[in-house]
Length: 217
Image (tube, rainbow, N blue to C red; front, side, top):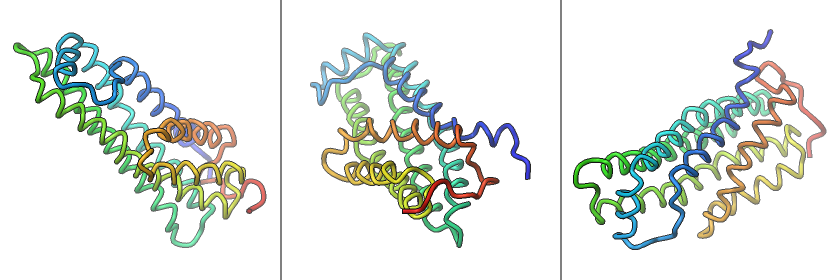
């Protein structure tokens, strides 16, 4: 079966998700940990266009992350065989992570819009929205990414889809995402998207290529 151009480029959706996510966060540009409510409201009211622009751009990463989850599932299930149990778990984790991420960034977008309206946003409204965003991205997103990464890592370690060192490193990252220090592992989770995206694209791995790469561990 001949691979279409869309199938060939699909793995790069992971890199696109990472780019949109990081560009949006940079534009949003509010990295202080648990600032006072009044300071959050002041920041949002003073930088409303910057906030809702960053939130909008970052929310687009959801589209690419779901697409990437599908691409990873295709690569995994072609090698896992059987009913593709772990491949399906990985796909579910990726989609759930994308939905949580989208909701969190839409919250940032909504905060910026409210701040740009007459009267701006109140300290109570500001701290509620920002804390909600922080917990979704810092905790719940990490949990679902742990599902995505760990299931993919187990399939890889069984089949040799990725180098064995990367499979074990992926498991370490996924376990770290389940600890109280998950926020410190988020950078590695996002980097995982880029590495897997480029690896699958460069190696031309897709649902139509079912030959395992390397030797299973």
